[in-house]
Length: 159
Image 1 (cartoon, one colour):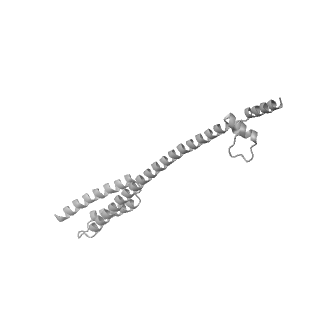
Image 2 (cartoon, rainbow, N blue to C red; image 1 turned 30 degrees about the vertical axis):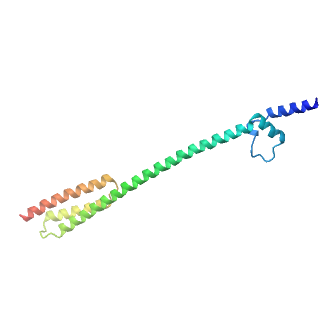
Image 3 (cartoon, one colour; image 1 turned 90 degrees about the vertical axis):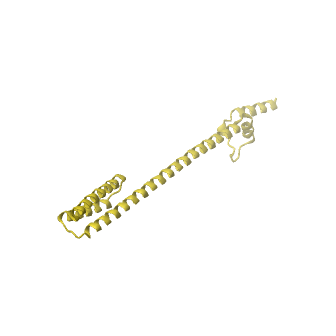
């Protein structure tokens, strides 16, 4: 009878163990706790829970890696766009400087020529403050207009 009482208490102890009590890394679990966790499936539930956490972490990691790759791609595109804009601005400044130099070295020194020189100098200042693609495009457009006016002025002076 005593054996049955002991066996019954062991079985009842097994029923009283929850999966949270079945820690695989516990420092000193008793024999009864180990037996209870093994027979009740507590260890298996704990392992399954840990595997789910690992799988979720792996999914989160993949998402984070994809986000990082997307961010790097956007950064590269932005860098390329910035380099293009800086190149366009440098070309516009160079064109403007050449046009200004050509205008200043002209033989005929008229009031209209002096006015064009002042406008080109102001445009040089404006070009040094251009930061966006639209501002650079506006500078390029103003340079093209100034070049047309200067060509017309030179043609009129040549006659």
